[in-house]
Image (cartoon, rainbow, N blue to C red; front, side, top):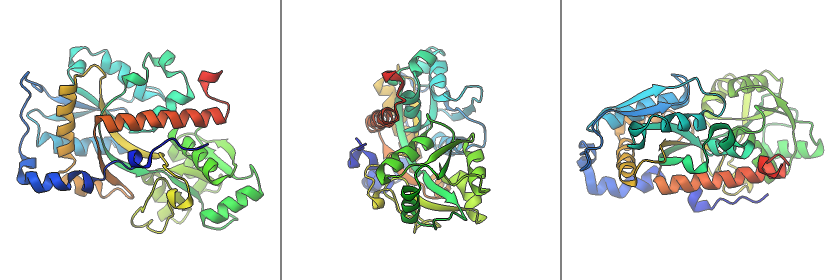
Length: 351
C-alpha cells in the first residue's frame, strides 16, 4: 500500500515556522485580551470538552491550553469531562454536542480529539449508522501539537534491539512475532499495519485491551511488540523493561530518544500515525465564530507558560494547523485508514 499523504500537508507548520513572524510583528500584543465579535460572541464561558477521564493526556492538555486561553479571552474557557461514551466517544460526543442546540451551534462547546485516530474508527465500522455522525460532522478549529506513536518491544527480545534486526527476524519467522493489540479500529493498531506494510513484515495478533494493558503485556514478556504513545510507554522504558525500535513520522524525537530512528529514516514516507491533538467544534458553527476560536487557541498555544508545560511531554512537537489544514489531515487520514482495512479485507464498506 502506498501512502496518500503529501509530505507538506502532514508536516504542517511547526510552531517556530508558524509563529516566528507573528511574534516579531505582534510582540506584546499577543498577550492582550481578544475582543468579542460584533455579534457579541462570546458572551458566556466557552467549554472545552474532554471525552476521557480527568488526569488523562487529553485532560492535562485541555486544562493547560484552557488556562492560557482564559488569559486572552473575554470569557473564561472551562474544561468539562465526559466518561460515559463508548469506544467511539468522539463521534458520540459530536452527536451529544449537536443535541445541545444554540449553545453548540454558536461555538460555545468545543472538544479535544486526536487525528488520525478518530478517522480510523470510520474505516473500521459504519460509524454513521451507529452514531448518526458522518465525516462531515468533524469541524476542526486548530491542531496544536503532535506526539508520535512508537514501535516498542520487550527488553529481552531474541532478535536484538534495532528495527533492522527486528524486521529481519520477522521476515525469517513469518507471523511468529506476538503483536499485542487492542484489535482493528484503533490508531495504534493501524500504525502497526502501516509500518508492517512499509517495512514488509508480518506479525501474529494477540488481543490485550487498552494501551496500559498492552504496555504491561509487552513489558512483562507476554507479548513482543506493540505501538504506544510516550506517556504510556515511558514508565516501562525507564524501568528497563521496554525498548523503542522506531517512532512515527520524521523525527528527531529529542531526549531520551534522540537516537531512535524515525519511520521516514526507514523509508516509510508521510507516516500519519502520531497523535495530532486537535480542538474541534460543532459542524454548524459559522466560519466567523470558528475563526475567532482558532485565533484564541492559536494565541494561547504561544503562551510561554503553556509552551513550557507542553515541552515536558517527551517527543512532543508544537504545531499550528488552521481549520482547513486540520480538516485536510483528517480527510487524508480516513483515506489511508480505509486502504489499510481494504488490504486486510475488513473495510465495512466493501462487505
